[in-house]
Length: 405
Image (cartoon, rainbow, N blue to C red; front, side, top):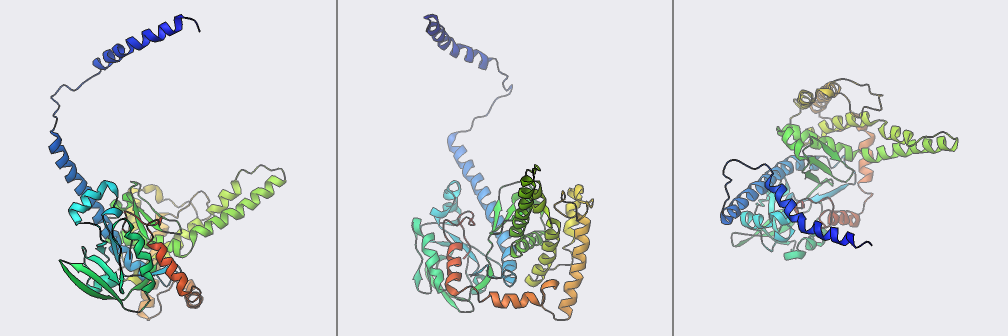
């Protein structure tokens, strides 16, 4: 290496701080006084804002819980063996709370080492039995709840004592006294309803859970609208639309392989086309079944179709009908969905007037028989295993460390 190179590097190293300082000094700067708050005041304001954010999240979770629980319960007959037993309340402790909100939860909710009831679902067995937010969980059917870091892990084994249509004894500590509550758990669809922080107006069903974006919670300001969205996504899961879409894509992949074997380049074209076959039909079916789920849950459905008029107002690109056989269009037009739902409402009201079962029309006979046989296909041990997985601390369906018991 020439001797001049180290010398140049040394000179650059010496002059670089001067150059940087000069450039920073020449940067544009505020022309008014910049207020700097004392650290103590900043800490207080930080706590206030964390409390606001935490309580807004709790409010949204309560809204989703209250709207979704009746639908999950009323839809259990449609969810085949993808069900579990539930009492209808969420719980947590300080260790299970998201770290950024942990101190806030301790301060605002009084969370400590024991498991504590956070929210009680409207119309749930827990609400009927008198479970209250803030109750400390002591024992279930004589089995003691754990505390501390391993508290959540102590819950799944306790579920072994739950049986459908059989009373359970829940012991809670409330304001320094122990209270015994008698609860009869009920069967619900095992598709946890979670929230995401996305601002996009959307909702998803992946065959395992239902996910509502923050944008959807803002858009669906009316509870009837959000209930419809939840029921729609539950219908996607209950009728296995995701697995069916994957199956259709695999069928298309076979055509891709055949094309390649004959020297015709086909980079996933048929697989893509296969995945889009019947997508519009699945959406219409989810709308159809959603209205049945709402009616079975006791929700009013006369105005449900107006949701699509509100969607059209904000997203007019959804109005134009692109054709049901157009593979480029994954969703039906908003007018098509509105009119179809209006027809379904009439169908449901006619069944109610005639005291007929509230089951989707094409499944009204064979579906009921299939459900009665599938109800016995899963033994009690398998059902208890599903319940335990639903409350596992490692369960991917859990959100914010507050599973539903």
